[in-house]
Each structure stands twice: as structure tokens, then as C-alpha cells.
Image (cartoon, rainbow, N blue to C red; front, side, top):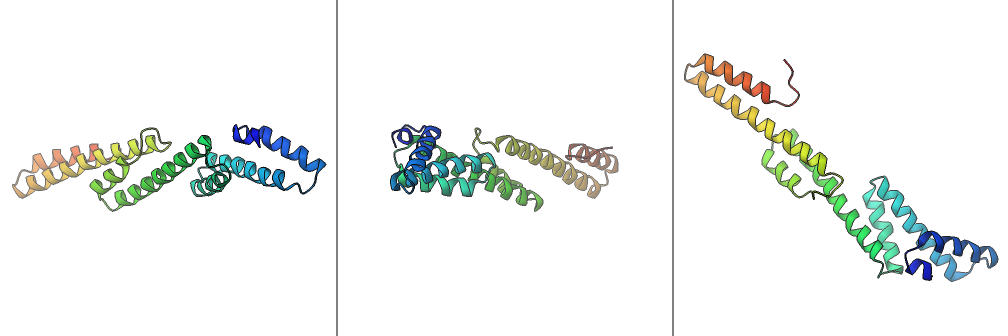
Length: 168
């Protein structure tokens, strides 16, 4: 139990295994082994970016060790990453619907230290390019209405050049 309190879960697990090999069904060792397994499984879930499982496992482990800073920090991080992952997915949906301001707002909630920060920055860059393309096409439309065909063609070309993924 002391090893688990000191957050040395590997040692705690080994000690529990030894105790259980000598005293099958030892209640305290069985309970502690289950908590240590939850911590181990939460680390696996975190590595797999399976935030709901990581959160659930850390919450259960915190019931047994509520003062564990490692578990509290891990739980906070898992919750933040789940929110970031959710907002990134939501922003992608908004981008498909050409709802740039709402997508930018969703992406703005993603912390710069999140594992999704680079994806959020890339999506924000894409929004900027899409807005540039949209503005150029609006100017082209105005030029056509005003009979300025040469200006319209230049604006269309500028819009296409700004459009992400466009290749001549």
C-alpha cells in the first residue's frame, strides 16, 4: 500500500502478486492489485487516445487514492484531451458546412499544449485560406456585375490560388 501511496505502481503490483501467491484471496492485496491494474489500464487508454476509458479508470482509481496527484493530473489531462478531440471533430463538421466563425471558435478552445494543437493550428490556417478564396470570389462576382471581366478573371485566379489543395 505504501508503494501505491508513493505512486510506485509497478512495485505495488509486484508486492501484491507476491502476497497473493502466498495468501490467496488476501482482501487488501486483491483490492490494491485491482487499483494498480486500473492505473495501468488508464495509461494504455491514454496512449491509445481512448479518453472516455482513461477518464473512467482514473476516476475509479481516485476513489481508492483521492490524494494522488498523478491520478488527479492524469484525469485533468484526459478530460482536457477529450474536450480538444471533441472540439476538433466538431470544427471539422462546421468547416464542411462552411461555418468558419463557429469552427474558429471551437478550435480556439484547444490548448496549445494539447496533443491536438497542431491539428487545430492546421485547421485554423485552412480557414484563413478558405476565407481568402471566398473574399476573392466575392470580388470577382462584383467585378462581373460591374462589367469588369478582366478584374473578375484575376479575382477568380486569386481565389483559386488561395484555395487549399488547388493545383493548376
